[in-house]
Image 1 (cartoon, rainbow, N blue to C red):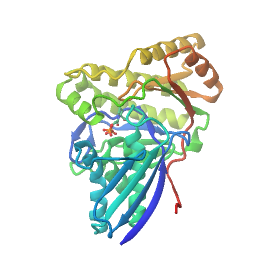
Image 2 (image 1 turned 135 degrees about the horizontal axis):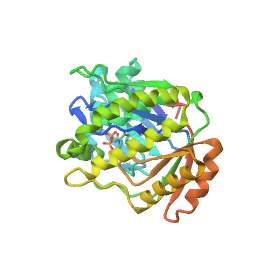
Image 3 (image 1 turned 60 degrees about the vertical axis):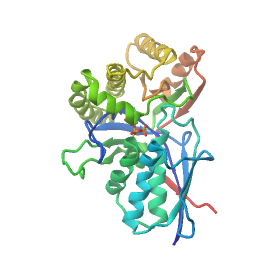
Image 4 (image 1 turned 90 degrees about the vertical axis):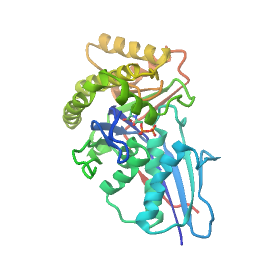
Length: 335
Ligand code: 2P0
């Protein structure tokens, strides 16, 4: 048996974040989340080759061979075993994944990486799965990966059922819905985070008192944000995005032992955006931070120069990347 495929995906930035599960095995979240898939300036390209003549699995990220006995890598690789079992094959796989942005620095490299792995693997094995089935497989490798299976704005539904069949990602609106939106990524740190998201959120659910209020609040915010996206109401989107980012980092700090992903540069960016919004008399930009110090700043094309100018005053930013809303995954032919 031989089959190969190459998929290109982009990371997504959550405006309402996923942080904590009600079922760890099935990866069923405590609240729904909403994200925006990023454009072609940030991509992951993953090539997958299944070959029954090979005697071992091999997995490379940015040219570096991964240790498949490492616990975290094994958790991600579970998606391959799941896909092999659906296809009824035990052919070994060679996976080579390349990111055009820093890995494991809070830029959701696992989301685009796992999404590309799932898409390329199912195509290589000629499996015909619908997007709901793909998203249920992808989230086992990395929760946020299910949102990178689509372009535009995406909601990962919390769902209600114990078997998880109603917890999947769906597109709210395609990339063409709101082309004025821009995402500016300010790379503040390119070092690997000390505590993985998976371990960190587990600890938050177990120990944070403040977290108890988060799921219901975030669920309500998802309803409001979806409506704001459909109406292209930037002010509401900006307010919800910044509040959710702060709520996430508050429950992180309230975790025991405490999780602190933001650094002084992240905080400086928050203050600068608040100043900019105040001087404009309305929100023209919104910051959001994942499990890392890097900032994503959402703004509109007409205000992007002001935001870039403001960021240029923050000396400790290492790199700035500007992107828009992405079209979502695609396949390419490779020799
Ligand atoms: C999110 N994050 O909604 C939230 C915001 C991080 C903060 O989903 O592979 O997708 O464990 O790092 O499980 C990150 O968690 O990824 C995440 P891993 P996972 O985007």
